[in-house]
Image (cartoon, rainbow, N blue to C red; front, side):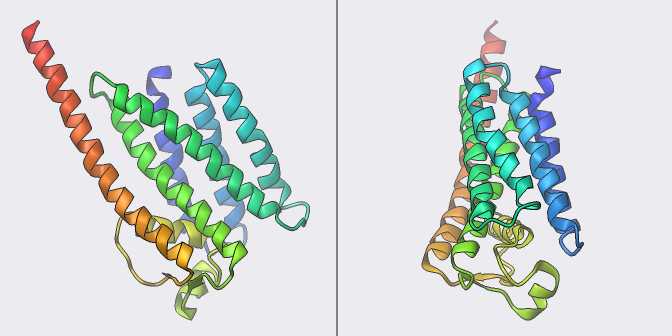
Length: 222
């Protein structure tokens, strides 16, 4: 089953990306998203479980974050939501870094490597979504959300539904314009996310093509 580890992670991430907008208007929408995030956490832990060092670091990052994430629903403590978002962003960054190392060390283009490449792209959108939500908590006026958009996404980017939606619209450079960053840091992050997303796809494709050509060439010589 370990040979499908990236596929399992990718499925978990696709489910999170799908349920985030689907349940955004439901009263329990945030709980559904937190379940999706938890599923990605578990899949990521399974991914890195073959190395004890990575597993320990992953668990140390994951457990407090999940406790805080679900604790927010039970205890109203200031800054607890910010801590949950920060912990999620750090955990995703750690796993994303490990996956990138695997991708650029790959000697053959396989389903696992392709799934890993797509996972990193989705992780980047998730990470920026967490950061946008943190910005919204610190500065409620960091984003301009028109009334029509607020009716289905909420009136604050601190709402994780809104943050994830804006992040992936920015990452894919769709730029609908229904949410506009007005805070300087938010605007800079949006620009960097859009540019990095395009550069990543270009570099990833070039890298995978290079690996494929190299493995095909070596196979031909043998």
